[in-house]
Image 1 (cartoon, rainbow, N blue to C red):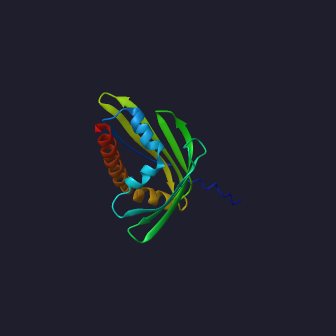
Image 2 (cartoon, rainbow, N blue to C red; image 1 turned 120 degrees about the vertical axis):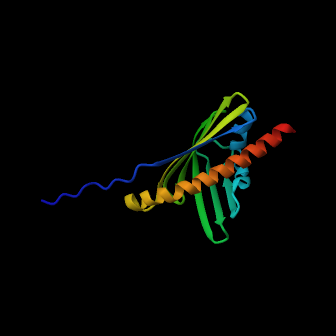
Image 3 (cartoon, helix red, strand yellow; image 1 turned 135 degrees about the vertical axis):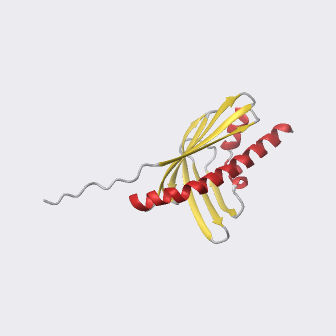
Length: 164
């Protein structure tokens, strides 16, 4: 008797990175509620072609972004805001994009000296279990660079605004 097993999608890969920002949590949270700030967070070689946002940002709001990567590749995303916990947390999930699944949690917590911003991403690369596992290995270093860049820029923009 031949029996076929159920093919399961791979478990999500988790990526997490934190940064300390010398500003109150309300300011850091407000920065994240303004999707126009996404335009400032692209690393070199990535250009925003289109950014459309349902406003105000709340659960159910959609954000549509088209990016040009290194002048060659176009990447289109639609994310939905899944959760908003005022002053603490914002969660977006991909409706469509380059991943089979994507959940991005932005956590902000007050700490001595300012706010700790933590980005936690759970993703599954496209391509089924085998390609998804290989994709996870390829995406990790890219996410590490992207969020190093984003945190550096976010901290700079928020702290500069706090000094004014």
